[in-house]
Image (tube, rainbow, N blue to C red; front, top):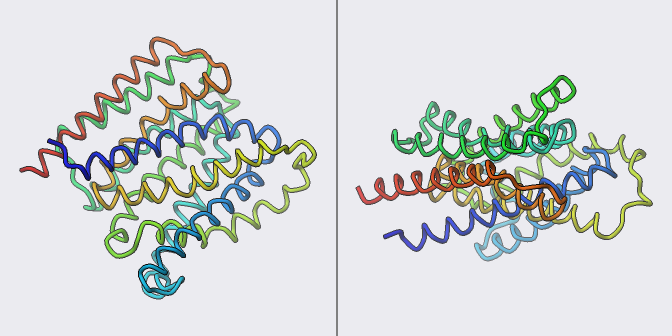
Length: 306
C-alpha cells in the first residue's frame, strides 16, 4: 500500500501542476498589455514577497538568522538562482511571448527528460528501466495532447526563435531540478527557493526597467494585477517550494515526471478561460500521461519496499 507521505507528496505535486497549468493562459492575457520582461519582474517580486514571509517564519521557528543559509551555502544558492530564476525565467517568458501556447507546452514537456538525463549522468538520481518507460509514456502523452490541437502549434519560421528559447528553458529547468537535490539535504526548500530568487532579482529588475515605458498602464485593471500576483506568489513562489520539497523526498526524476501533466491542465484551463476546443486526441494524451505517472509511482514503491 502507498505510504501516507507518498500520497501527501502526490497531492502536493498535483496542486503544483494545477497552478502551472492555469498559469499559461493567465500569462498570455497579461502579455497582451505588458512587455514580457516588465511582467516578469512584477510577478517575480510578488514571488519574493510571498517567499520572504515564509522564509522569515521558518527561520524564526528554527531559531536561526534570516540570512544564515548564505553564510554556509551562499555560492551554491547564487548558482541555483542564476539557473532557476535568471536564465530559466528569462528564457521561459521570452519563449512564451514568441511562440504559440501549444508549442510552448510541448517543448516544456521535455523538461522531465532533461532532468532524468542530468540526474543520471551526475549520479544524483537512478531510474530503473521500467521508470524510463513510464517517463517516455508521459512525454508521449504530452506530445499527443498538444499535437492533437494542430491549429495551436506552429514550428514555422515565424516562431522558430521562440521554440529554440523554450527548448533552452526546458534544459535550464531540468538542470535546476537536479542541482537543487544536494542542497535539499542541508537547507529548507523555502530557503533554497527564496534566496535563489533573491540573487536573480537585481538582474531581472535592471533588465525590465527600460521596458516600463512601453506598458499600457491605463489598461492595467485589478484583474491584471491579480493575475500577476497569482503567477508570481503561487506559480513562481509557493509551488517551487513544494517542487523542491518533492525533490528532497522522492528525487528529481520522479518529481519532474509530474511536469508532463501541465499540458493536460493547460488544455482544460484554456477551454475554460479562452474557449479553446478540447479534442479526442488530447484526451487520449491525458490517459497516456496518467498511465506513465502510474508506472513511475509503482516503480518507486517497489524500490522502497525492495
